[in-house]
Image 1 (cartoon, rainbow, N blue to C red):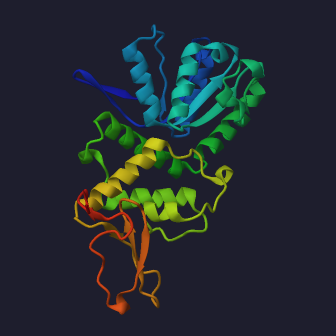
Image 2: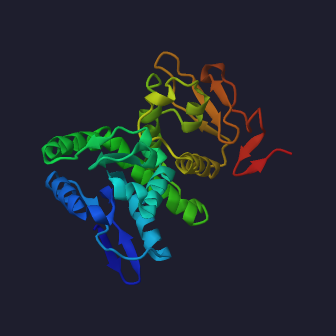
Length: 292
């Protein structure tokens, strides 16, 4: 179990995989844990059979939030487990990648609805074990850099929310730019100008169907966190706009994107016009001040 106690609180280390299972399947859970460890993955698994409590549930929730993948050992006991249901529910709330591995015959009507639409890996016999491990590794490693960044951003966004959304917990500078580029990599296939802001991205029409987006998808708190980070960084400069880079070498026009209403204005320096002092659409001045 990847957790370290420090004085009166627990420091959670981001794990690759959170293993959710019924205590009746502990023998298989150990087998799976050992196989994943041999392949270089860190796992978070609760070996202790203790009664659920508020502190215990918070610990489980934090472990899921810090893990990149929730691996669910699907069996008749786990399908009926209230604890396993809570773990799946929390993983869904955080848009975690969930991978079910089936170890016995389970009635579909007894399975958590969130598992029904997923691809199952079967490991019901000894002969199926090695192919199941291979399929599991492949499923974990698919777009794994995206998954790991998703986890880091979700943890930081939740930390911001847990601390009353104080600006000091927001991203800025290079860290914010990296987060925006990550958003583009997963949401836009034909819009490859990674220097465009999140606000500009929201003005672009959908170029990818929802089914084609990378998995896991963004959470609402992640988008709110990034938008708040951008607004905070820019409003402190007393500007109403974010200046985008020139569109090309031959046409050095650049965009001014309002950090409040997201209106986009194409500015042409060759016309020798001054940059407006406030947003022509909503009147935003910057520094959270508005024109009367």
